[in-house]
Amino acid sequence: MDKQLGFAHFWQQGDVVSHVLTILLLLMSVCSWSLLLLKLIEQRRLRRALRQALPAFWQAPGKAAAMAVLTQQDGSRMLSGLAIQAEQAAQAYASKSGVGLGGELDAADYLGRILQQALQQSQARLEQGLTVLASVGATAPFVGLFGTVWGIYHALISLSGRTQMTLDQVAGPVGEALIMTAIGLFVAIPAVLGYNASTRGNRLLLAQLESFAHGLHAYLVAGVRMPLAQAEPAGEAQPQTAGRGV
Image (tube, rainbow, N blue to C red; front, side):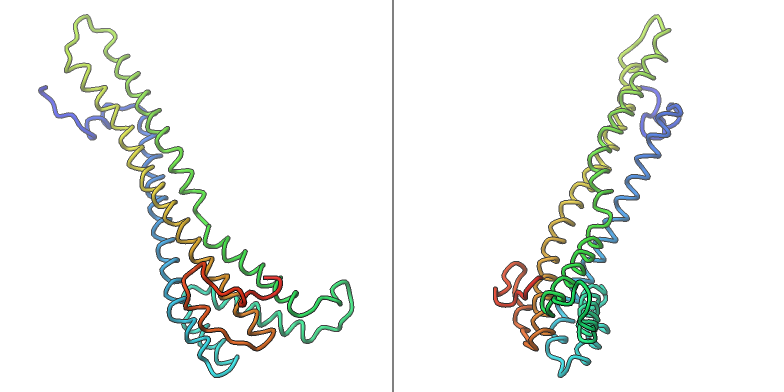
């Protein structure tokens, strides 16, 4: 071959469709890598809070001091959000008039429902962006494949009027069209791996958040502190820490 073949030459020889598909794949790649970075930072903050803020919370001398130290050391704002909502719910129940449809609901059930709602909010926050990662991982290979098919079609059309063709004349444009498939895989593979890693990390973190919610429920309802429950690995919380309704 007497000319250099590569991505630059492919871009010069491509038409509007191939350019649009390439830009689309580039945007999908930037979006997926940005989401992966944000999820990594978010999970890292929550892990640090679980490792540092929770022991300080359970070792605080009183409820006010515990809330203050948790708010100060929780960079993720998830643990402190759970604690603040639970504390506000406990105060609201204490000042209720006892009338209305919920007048017969006891404190444990009421607090358990509030904590359950707070956990659902934390789960929704942790899962933000995962749908985009899954969509990128599922569609990027097909976008690249479509670009390859279109590139091959475009190359064959441009060669159809020639009476004589060599292997180099056919292999060059077809090989350049296959770059689109490689780009699609390059975009999809990190998105799929990032989605799986983020899902597994979220599952472990949510288990620890639930363990903290159970301990918080018991602490606010019965005044029982259970600092050891927060030091256990996710999924191994003691059964007696589970408060009613959580």
